Image (cartoon, rainbow, N blue to C red; front, side, top):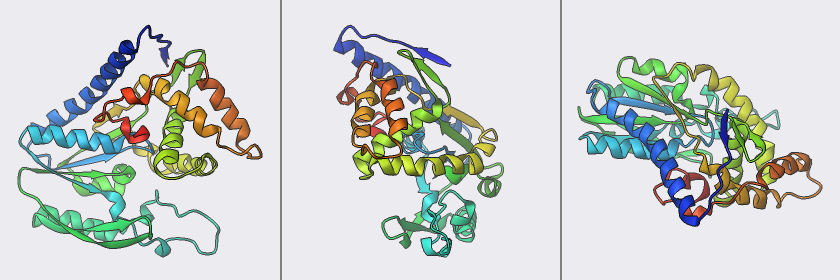
Length: 299
């Protein structure tokens, strides 16, 4: 349990606190990438983590550090190997497509791509269009002996994926890995990720809080089934919690939750969440540097 009750006397203290937290988080990723850069036998990185763990930003920092160490880096999203949605959706049931299942991937295509990269140094990688739910085309990826390929996605920890890279990869798992006691309330690691998702989806994906609440239970269920059982079988595990996030998210979470209709069945949960954040001192999101990993959630 991380305990935190920091009070800020000035705005400069807030800015300095944000910089310190970001530096500590990025330091962990840089340490991981530096260890990988020294090992020329490592040709692949499998970067995984549950929803809103910060994988996109971690991939960026890994890339920047490896490039500085003289490695060429290519990032490939495993999401691009999804089958067309209609191929695996159960048309007889009114259910969401289970994108977290290994069955949602065109596994044959993924294996072919990996083998071609290993043997020929070149492969056609699919491009998946989430708006249409279909594959929209391909892009050609070419690698050399100095290239590191980052395969990023929640699926990167699945045993069906990891067994294709024996001896040639580092497995990195990113997650909010601590519960927090702050300003008289307790925030579980799961609730912290929910707050990130609530704000991110509202700000950038046009999702109302009702929808985020509705989907969240399914997200968590899939994580417990498909991701967490394999989270201990990684080489590097990085905690993506940063203390300032509670302060930054506080006014945003309260604002988003206020959009929930009074008749919503999620109102009791929303009220409980808002109560936890109402006594948290605010840190303006304007104090978050543009290169911070947290811009992934707040812009």
